[in-house]
Every structure is written in structure tokens, then in C-alpha cells.
Length: 212
Image 1 (cartoon, rainbow, N blue to C red):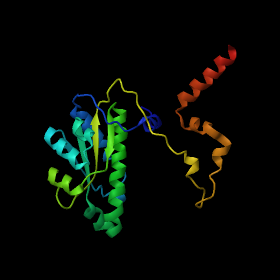
Image 2 (cartoon, rainbow, N blue to C red):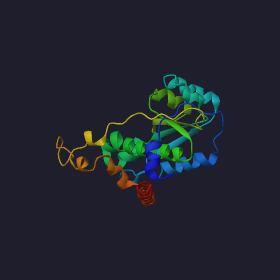
Image 3 (cartoon, rainbow, N blue to C red):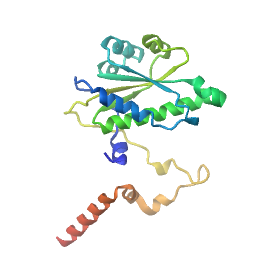
Image 4 (cartoon, rainbow, N blue to C red):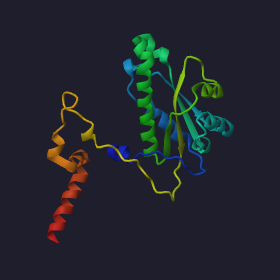
């Protein structure tokens, strides 16, 4: 899948087929996660892969009873090590950098899951202490999020939430100064980031249309 197609088509999926996910897929998703950037290359993340039905049910309860947590074939809990980042960057490393780094890894994982044809959902609402107790997470780690994974139900139409157009929330040089270049291109700007073969295809379509 082309990277922009993968980004645009990614959406949260909370209903899954009752079908196992190959371990290779899980490995590739975590591998994608650890390719994310991190402050000072400290890589403050750790991962717990959960397939046990009883543990998933306990996690669902700890996650404000979100049923897709227990129904997903696989749940990956992503943890951050604040002290690891704090050793180098102090309080800012503990309270910010390790969270940013882990979030970057999570987004990579979501995109990898989409590329593999899986449905996934980022779960951030849960009782941290309860999750730590369920998974026997050591005190030094903080559970940041969980990702539920599964094959999407084939007959359900994908739905993606709308996004605020970036030109409404992007400023030039200083906050409040309009980012005006978009006005000159309109929706055509999207075409400029497509792969070359797509440009060629569109040009051919226009030529053939004119011949008709």
C-alpha cells in the first residue's frame, strides 16, 4: 500500500472476525513500532501481547468495559519507561518525551496493521493501576495505550471520521497568520503528493476523454 493511501484509509475498527492473527503479523506490527523516532534514540517502549481470553476480559473491564478489548483476537499493550528518558532529559523526559516517543510507535503500529489488512483501534481510556496489576507490569513502566487487533468483519462498510481541513488549523510563521498557499491550489494539492504512475494515469484518462 502506498504510504498516503495507508494513512488516509486507516480508521478505528472495533468489530472483528473470530479468526486468529498470524504471529508473523504481530511481529511485523511491533517491528514497525520500534522504527519510530525517539528522543535521544532512548526507545523507551515495551510491549505486552495478550491473547489469553481471561486476561482480555479483565483488560476490557479495566478499560471502562470496552467490549472490543475482550473480543479482539489480539491486544497489544504499549508501555513507556519514564526513567529511561528521564535519565537523559530530566523531568521533561519523564513527563513528555517518553509519551511522545511511545505515541509515535503506536501510530506506526496502526499503519502497519492497516497495511496488513487488519483492523485496529487505539485504546487510551483505562485504569492504569488496574492494568498494571492484571499484566504484572513493573513499577518503573507506565501503560500508555492498548491496540486491539483483528480482521475486520467483511460485510461491514468501513467508516472514517471526518477531519478538520489542515488549512484551517495551520499558520504561517506566527500563530494566526493565514497559510495562504492552499488558496492557489485548492484540492489539486493532493494530486501533487501522489506517486508518479498515478499522475500518468490521470493524464492518460484526460487525453482519452478528450478524444471521445
